Image 1 (cartoon, one colour):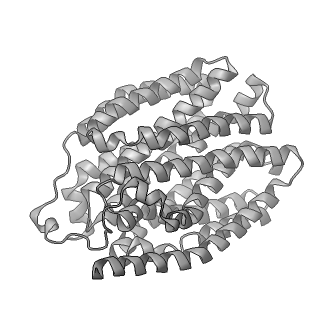
Image 2: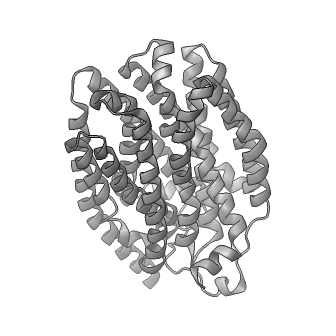
Image 3: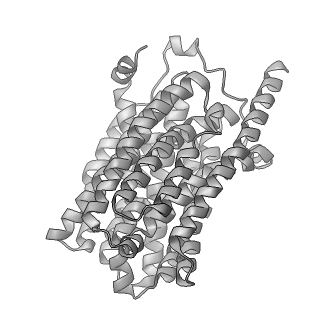
Length: 409
């Protein structure tokens, strides 16, 4: 089946998965941080205090996700959407009217849990469960909704500020979620995909046996995988969260900087599709050692290049790594741990990723307050990526050896 035939036959579910990741943008750091300067000013917060508040809320969402995320194994995708999207809309509306720091932390908790966490979780779980032999392609199409949001929403946000305040933008986001996102995603996903007879006869033999969540948590290789899996979320969230500070530090024009998101989104889109083809051909496990190398290069570029075009180089390289990682993570867990308990297992992995997104802004914010150079921190992140890539050489080989032993048994 050609790529275009695959798209044509599966457009309903692929578009539904795409929209779920697109609308998760309202809980993603890049969107929340667009209001970061205004929030710090109105609430009287320093970089460290804002980072700590964000970290606390995100950590709470990470602790909640392993329990709440199991709902995808109990309810259908469409019924889960009916719960999650209205909850995210309520959080957006509350952001637009809140005057309390305590309420602000609760709002960020809800944005992170229902936006970044659950909408992405629903989309990736559906693609991982409904597809097997062409899982890489399915994930690569659905996941580029993230890049659609990253390309479009920062520019829309900047222009919206011309005609309305930042609080009005959040209220408008709630309206969009309730009256566009909710009915459209529910209608698209209410009919679950049933694989054809041909697909049943060509089941992806790369999938491992069906591990339980308890078994996964006892597996040492799972924590080895997290060394690499957490890097994109930690680094990306940290850089997006403190982007206002970086813009001020380097005297960049905010509108010119916003164009860099379009570059990143384009590169992520292209390389997510490329990664989908490579995953289907070689497997996600074999791609593990390479996907962080472009991210390392992007960190070094941001550290070394001070003019505005440095942000474009950084975002382009980050897009390459994000494209690979977004597709890779959607296809990896079924290959390593099977599909029967995929919702519960993915909830754990996303919780760890959300934990990484919580840790980054808080730690780096206080390091900035203590006078530690932010560009130097970015350089160290690049070194970490190279070290994690080396570790993945060992981890990927051990996983493949284990799967061969299981198949032989």
